[in-house]
Length: 276
Image (cartoon, rainbow, N blue to C red):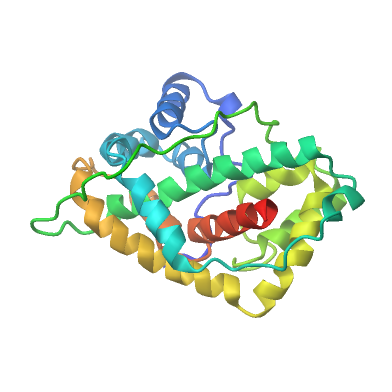
């Protein structure tokens, strides 16, 4: 099983640079998932021949069912998020972060949490073996209330990030991953607009990392995601023949605790920490 990304999230095609069929598919993914951005798994697959089109065609019905949303809610509630010490009341202001900064950063985090979380659940279903007689759980309760996504700040290219900020990104990215030089998850690059926030995140989550609490939660989430995926596997359409590279990429993406599971874990822990 892979432990790091089979593509580079930093150099994967940018949404703004997508053209033709890729741009159309990105727009369809955003609309179906009700998200303001396309995260790196789809951008990575876009660089692998027809993998983006073939994967999305087979997986789209899973997303449309609404089941990944409910699976994500159950999994986040059950996983036992790592919880850092609460922020001091004036901590954000003391490092120069304004209320508008925090509102914007929370919106970025929420966007990635929804996108990464739905992708973990739906793509776990995409690769899960089909179980005889499996049925989707019935939807219960009201439909999920979604954020009214504000305009998000642009995703900065590597060359637009100052060296000291990039170094901080590398070290935050190491939480729950294979190390500081692992593929940099896109959330951290998006938060490069607020270096002071990255520094606070590093200080708050470093003790959890040193005690192995982030890695343990990541592993639990992979197990929960696999179980949820097995329940939803019948929702997918039979995929056309994917390349070995694409299949390895998707399998590693959902099956490795250091890939999307860590970003779902730490992203939701981060949102909870900022909201307390």
